[in-house]
Amino acid sequence: MWALLTNVKFAVFQISLIVVAGLIGALVRQIPSFALRDYGAYQRELQDLHARYDGAAILGWQFGPAMVDLFERLGFFRVFSSPWFAALATILVISIVACTLDRLPRLWREAREVRVVQPESYFDARLPRRALVGGASPDAEGRAGEGPLSADDVAAVLARRRYVVTRVTAADAAYVYGDRNRYSKLATLLTHTGLVLFLVAGAVTGTLGYETVVFLADGQSAPVQPVGTPDNLLVKNLGFAAPRNPDGSFADFYSDIVVYREGAELARKRIRVNDPLTVAGFTFHQNTFGPAESLEIRGSNGQLLWAGPVILDSEALGFPAGTIAIPGSDVGLQLVLARDDAGGPILALVGYRQLPGTQSATVVFLGKLRLGESSQAQASGGFSIRWTGAAAWTGMVVKSDPGAQIVWIAFVALISGIAITFYFPRRRLWARVAEGRVALVLRAERYVSADPELADLVSALRARVAGG
Image (tube, rainbow, N blue to C red):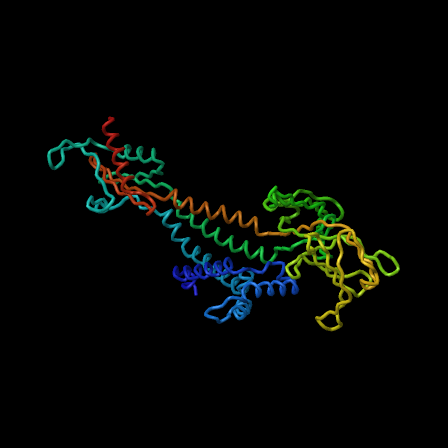
């Protein structure tokens, strides 16, 4: 098992699976996380997915409905919270940790254990990245030598280029070893830590995170978490606005909100799409909006049953629609905002009563109102319904993401590891100094242009000879 977990091909295979899963999650519409905790919301999302994909067909074969059912069973509509994705991420984390532990002793030995004195054959000029500099005697072709060099000269040139220098004097020669960015390969630990922390952050957010959508008309408030949650927050919509440009397009839309805890105000802000409010671990994002119609409903004896806005957050026949249960009765009221032939607003009323033990309902009354009008009680099921005002509601996505801080730590670790690896690669140079002549060997990571660097060191040594 250890051999499998530390196998590079197995790691590549795991990463490929994660990438494919991520592509599915990016290309296929995902069910919002709040709907995963609400059966009714989940079913509504599935209905929307069927409406979106059911029409897909190839050569007359309509495969959309079967595809939606298959994707739902496989978890493709909730990839990042599915058990199989969690299993893939867990195995990848274990593999990364195993690979890190497996490589760490070798990386540490490579950084710490250095052999300064090398055999003379190691400096053979016929091998790559070797050079010979200095020497007081003429060369084989009778040209004047470059002049003698000492171990001090080599050490000075290396120190000026930020090499850590070690010197050893032997019977036959002096040896100088220079090491630059000695521990840079250990930066892979930072890279691996960043990858692990990214996956841990996803697990923390998926397990401990919270997301919901709150719809509020002007002046309305609602709890952020389920009623009864300790230290729950209450958010209130002070007012929503959506000003328009001269051509009728929306210039902006924003909500003025205030957040309370146990009656004490924590924060207030005008939020926009890209300018949320963050308080007490929750972030309030402006997300959507729609019409909200204010009603006044009275019973047969004139008592007031309802006075306030009704949010039209659904559709009926392509028009904004919403429902409300009339307090103190078993009658529900559906509102549909439409327009008459002249383009004026009309509020259609559908009173209904749910049939016991079924999903069906029977219509109690039908009607329509213009703004400011009231219905006759005998024509609307014994209720007097008045359309008192037209406004709007705001929709906010409220999130708690405890993994966000871990993501930032993971990002810093990952980028730091990559930057150190690529911008500060290790270089090692061995020099053998004998009779004023220096033999050089340069070894470097593949990210280093080693030949130009060796040529630069040789030039620096020759310049040192020329300068006396």
